[in-house]
Image (cartoon, rainbow, N blue to C red; front, side, top):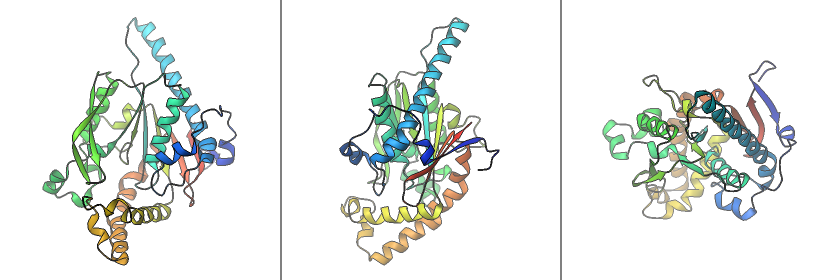
Length: 306
């Protein structure tokens, strides 16, 4: 980004120098529990990247509370402030889920559990496989048209309307399909919404998901690195979760390693890589914060909108 960029650029060395409390560290055991498969996040990342980020999010949260109070006093109205919504976007296999889980735990710890912090993923807003098959979209799963975008926007609208209980559909990566059961979110103070599509826009809708966000984050990396991480994760799953005969992908444990590799490469080249170029990467500069990862999966640069 050039000198006239709308973002402040913080190389890791500069970002880590920001002053924050050092009492919010996760333990090695906690980090291991929430670390995504093949994600190399470390306690060093927690101290150098996520602690400053949590402090920044807390500043934005308190700013929202203050402005809400001032506005209600001016308008002579009495209304509870709406949830503070954090959106996290980025490609498949870039580490969004780990970042979301880390932030949930650390925000809880930052506020000493005095705030209710929730986390949801947009996978639950995919159409069920039966619907995707009927629409001929199974090969487009993850693309914008494979999501029930109206339902997702309605969910966010209900959250921001302070609806008492909001239903969230659930997704299983094990069965590769929507679950019958749902989850209920009850007026959180802070909610993290993670998914490849959270910063995308739909020209057929008047309202976009990001209209409801108070802060947005994009997880960034070079495509070649994300593709490599995707392949590594696929083979790790092939040796673990895919071994279960109930897994949707169990069939790929019965073919040769080279055949499995060709399948994974084709999936990236025909689906995930195309989706990244056409629908995900272009949303990067809609985010308020960009976390850029290097080849080692570690965050090397932070870009914060001025």
